[in-house]
Image 1 (cartoon, helix red, strand yellow):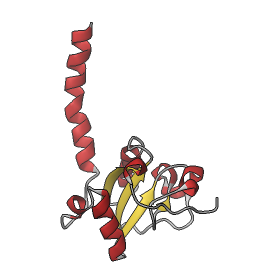
Image 2 (image 1 turned 120 degrees about the vertical axis):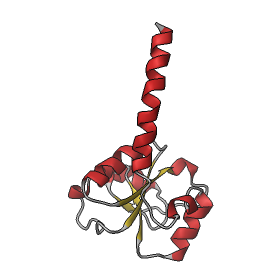
Image 3 (image 1 turned 90 degrees about the vertical axis):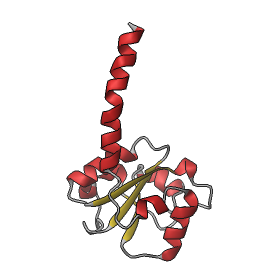
Image 4 (image 1 turned 180 degrees about the horizontal axis):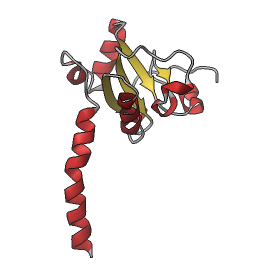
Length: 134
């Protein structure tokens, strides 16, 4: 029984990697630049208007503390927000621990966004966070 479960897990691993690769679509090597918190902080400091940091957590989690300049798009569902980013923007998604942002990235790709990068979770952000009124 344990052996068959292990084999099934091994067979699913390549599928998980493929899905991850599909949501690292930033051009110009930007994805490599922002893999670390320091790199993301530098990109934010550059104020590049092409880049949008997206927090995909629920509004209450976002309001309690988010990465500076991030906008809130819960679950990656742009239909639920007033002014979604333009489809040609470079989106950098994160959630709390890194589990919800890949799913949100897939939704945003299906919605027509071309440049989506799943950064991971805010738990990896060691710098000050912004707090906003909910």
